[in-house]
Length: 289
Ligand SMILES: Nc1ncnc2c1ncn2[C@@H]1O[C@H](COP(=O)(O)OP(=O)(O)O)[C@@H](O)[C@H]1O
Ligand SMILES: [Mg+2]
Figure (spheres, rainbow, N blue to C red):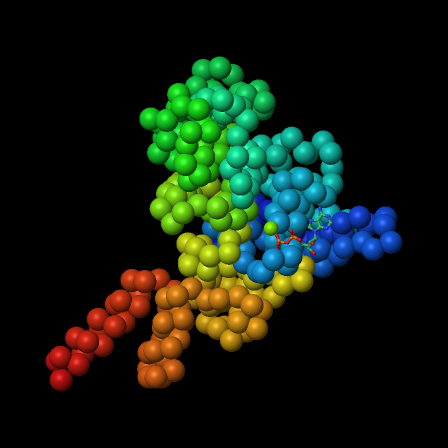
């Protein structure tokens, strides 16, 4: 059976990025990255501080341009200034600290700000704002001043603001880092729903269990991609990840430890349900003997 190859929505070829390239000490932050991101992917990027995750993300919506190599978004090269606006409206980015992204004094005005700047007409603007606030479950707060909201609510407003621009790709750069566990769950649920509706998601995170949300994980180290695969494939490399000062999700850690006691237990389970199922299966097996 022949499968029609899906055109990548983002294609990165031999990407290098230097900060301060003209100075005496340029910083070589990205050292030759090749990556294709397909429409509908939920790609999670992990790697410890300074490994180049944010620099990579900023190269995807023209906040930075490659010093060598190319990035294409829907076939548009980021080097060509004529593409900047179209790329920025296709690729939306949410940062770590929601306060820095909130610009208006009323929630719905804040959400309208981005699409208004893209020239979305009034009627459609109203629809989009309502839709985006609905997606993040913040409609009832539409008339409130953002500064009175919790950090999690603010972050959801920031996501709504990006969503109202209807990007095909949503990048979250440690967007759940400042939130409490409940706020984090709210944001993850909103992002999961958007991905189910077809939005391509690129999520940078410190929380390894969040990587289980994705269909692909890449691990960065010193400006390079050092591991790539499904969450289960990547997290099966427990020792290599530890050598990179990264953890595995607690579920995988448990599964790995159980495997060390009993080699028939799979060492690389990522989802809580899978660990529970495996244990249940064994308990049932035992009671049948
Ligand atoms: N604005 C900047 N100017 C100079 N160097 C920077 C700048 N931003 C990041 N860097 C450097 O680039 C490298 C990658 O940083 P970054 O992409 O922020 O990594 P991460 O997001 O994985 O923590 C680090 O060595 C960092 O110090
Ligand atoms: Mg960063």
